[in-house]
Image 1 (cartoon, rainbow, N blue to C red):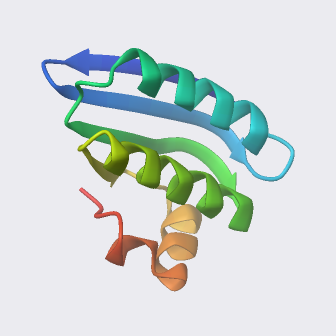
Image 2 (spheres, rainbow, N blue to C red):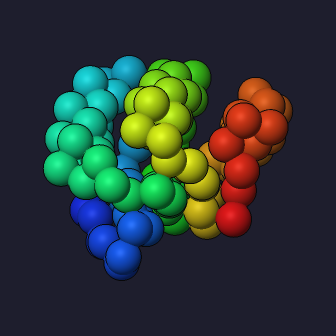
Amino acid sequence: MQITKRLAGRKLWLYLEGELDECTAAQMRRAADEILDEHPLAREVIFNLSGVRFMDSTGIGFLIGRYKKIQRFGGKMYLEDPDLSADKVLSVSGVYSLIPKL
């Protein structure tokens, strides 16, 4: 699993690639939090999930944790371009009621 970033003004995109599960969540949490800490003035953080091949409930926990962190900074979080299987997991779990999908 890897994460890359793109900053444009006060918008921060985080591009996730690989599997977001129990084996990778801790590594992704550290990497994402480091990026978020580097950019506390970002008001919109968009997690692009187009490169996520698999996600389980641990991945949902990862996203909810980042949502709470971004809220503390006064920002908003969005999810972008999940593949079909990730979209299904996010829909069924109700994540989109908390974190909007673009």
